[in-house]
Image 1: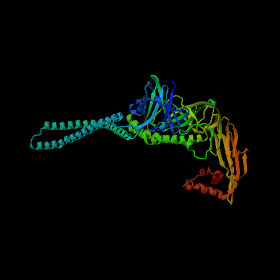
Image 2 (image 1 turned 135 degrees about the vertical axis):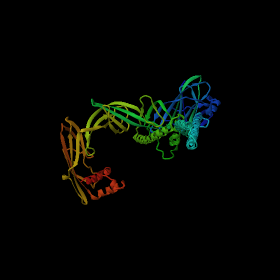
Image 3 (image 1 turned 180 degrees about the vertical axis):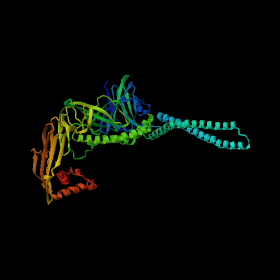
Length: 635
């Protein structure tokens, strides 16, 4: 028997009954595996089935497990699986205790055997005074309260007894004085009184210590129980989602039922590791990861994970042009608008109820409330930062028409409290070319770099790259989006054996201010190989390039001579022997209006609170005007 599939568009799935068919209102579904809903002939649905489908309390509860998850930047597509026995009579089954922020427009149901007659999404309040969880927690709290009250009562009794015993002491002292005046002292009688007082105080103190120990043990439990009670009270208005499915078969048969839906509260971030070996300079190992975090209200235990840069509210369509209609576009946008609105309702419910839902799960699992609050709040803050960054990142990829999908290597478990989990999504060995580059104007550290070609068969997403050499962590760098087959370079490590300097030669530099200022600039760049072995590197520097008619760059001198690029970049390929040093000289003159720099200072001062808080680095993004200003400040 072929499999069946059904999807639901909205919470109150509208039944449109015609003369010969009944159709559940359906909307578009996300992902490459989405399948269309099938109308069902009205004759195939007994009236009793429709009545039962409206009665969630009579539905058989399905024991389901999250088996597959597709993670987007701001949501996840969840697939749950359950096994049931079908009969020739329609039966209603229920996926219960789903979070109240399930996206109704994304709900889909499929079966391996049998027929799907009806699918309905219901919501109800999560906790009530008669719920088993509430009764259990309330009974525990009541028992702890009685134990606490008994200990506090006992402590009051012991405190009273202590005062009574202490009151005997002055009485015995007065009796001793009277006895010595009016007759011989009865030592045995007095000693008996003292012994009674001492032993009574000792026993009372021991009993008080025991009671206080008992209180010290019960008070944390009682406080935690009080918070569990408050957590349960806070969810009286918290919703849970129930998906009711009516199934039927031509004969008794087992079947697998899959429920798929979208949930907000999930995000992931791409990152990479690059591992090189000193014994192999021709290849490097690149491992890509997805760091996933979720507070969706569900636990993903041993689930198949995949990751997508696609927007969860955008449809994937063939790129083709439609008519350029200048009138009403309502019909063309109605489906997408409905889809976005459906997810917007889910997102709003998530933001309003998520913390209470997780507190409820923590309380019913008898976890310490303090631990939950600390972990949850910390993880949620991290989650928000990552999600905001990832959403912007993936939006930038979509603007260039790029989407990518990755499958996790193996099954993974992800907690629902926002704790990040790193999952491997790719591994490859790439051919590499190692070189040393130096740009002393930017940094006085030369750098080992790797020239690579992405031959992994999938794109490398933008993200952080952890660098390792022979298993030793070197540091972190970043990579931009790298398409399949694209060449790119990565920083590897500092080349410590190369010493750089770049100094202004003040004997050949000068500044004459007039209506048109004239600045002469000369730099001396020194490169030295500190190693006993020869080394090769690429040295880079630059000269100003004017895109302003009022600014002229003249009398450029470069030694050793090299031809500048279009952007004024200079490049030398050097081969230095052991302990060898080389010098390079760069000089030029700049002529410009004096008011040009003043105007640059005025514009930039508006971006900084005070002159004291500005530095020459603040003018780097001001083009050649900023370069001139920095040069003037260094003269």
